[in-house]
Image (tube, rainbow, N blue to C red):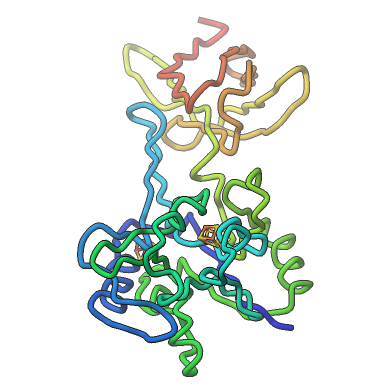
Length: 284
Ligand code: SF4
Ligand code: SF4
């Protein structure tokens, strides 16, 4: 049977918050019987954008990660619900029944991702129900998909085998796999949010004039193995992305026929800018 999934591309999010506002527009003050009670105007973030800033000036990266209910296949919230107030539909969508869930604030704590919110006015636990009321009346796209200007969201209703192939082909990841909840919300380019980089700037000084050292070959190694190779760009900058933070010592080997070879070893704890490195001509 085909089931719903959602792919979120971290690389494309600009933190405009349109998805957050569209969620508010859809649910605040609107009652969808059988699906969801009205969301309060304040306090709830059924969609929220987490941000991460890493590196040091002038080499700083910012990444944004939209976060919502993951519609887990082995959802702790469903497992802990003994009265059917939280349940998974055959199409994969995890729902909180707005009537059965009334008066039970413990439901909020059943989600390890913090995706469930308590509505004091309605006395009910709530979360994003995958716009199930819209899909059931034939809407082809989710509200977040409709409003995102950069195409971060892609919903798809496919067989699990097809989805597994897409996950493999596009190298998708889920949040907190250690929870063993098996989310149906997948992330593309999640490394932008979780991994670290080592970078720096290479310059030369000739006749008292500082200039970018362009096209210097650089190899990033660890424990004698070469992990990545690259060149300094037109500004003399180089950067190796996608490294695990707090992952020990790395050695950068620089090679230049004009300036000779040298290497630097650094410990990677958080994203690291090595600063401006000056090359000296071996014949000087
Ligand atoms: S993210 Fe939380 S609320 Fe959503 S299905 Fe998973 S456990 Fe349940
Ligand atoms: S609408 Fe798209 S770009 Fe804007 S915050 Fe949401 S996911 Fe990011």
